[in-house]
Length: 182
Image (cartoon, rainbow, N blue to C red):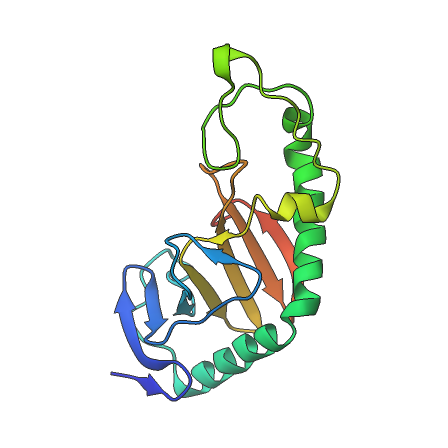
């Protein structure tokens, strides 16, 4: 079994290989109200969609450690980029629906059906901070990949079916989309 000082034991599980140690991600909450999240290391599947069976090599683990540490060190700057890119995504993909009276398709803690069956009033989401409130819950894990890349799957209160995934390379958001779409 592989072990690394920063991550601890590297275990194989349902999400591929993950670290024994969990990590707190500032600005985010966890889906199950835990204080920290699991860190998956490397891809879960290869290019042929076969489960990866070999754990990451020590050199990869060291690169993953550097990627995660840099992300956590620069989180105050990265969070601004996350908020801006995610708000742009909202405006392109969801604003047409939520910025006028709408039918609540799936209730959650942020969006609930109105009494007497009326349409829900528009969300009036006019800035990145308001929008970020709908995307604070990490699904319980983040994935650290090669080439200074992180993927963060989020329970998105505006589309819980598809969720939201952030792909971050060199601490810049390069993609925002549904989970497994980045």
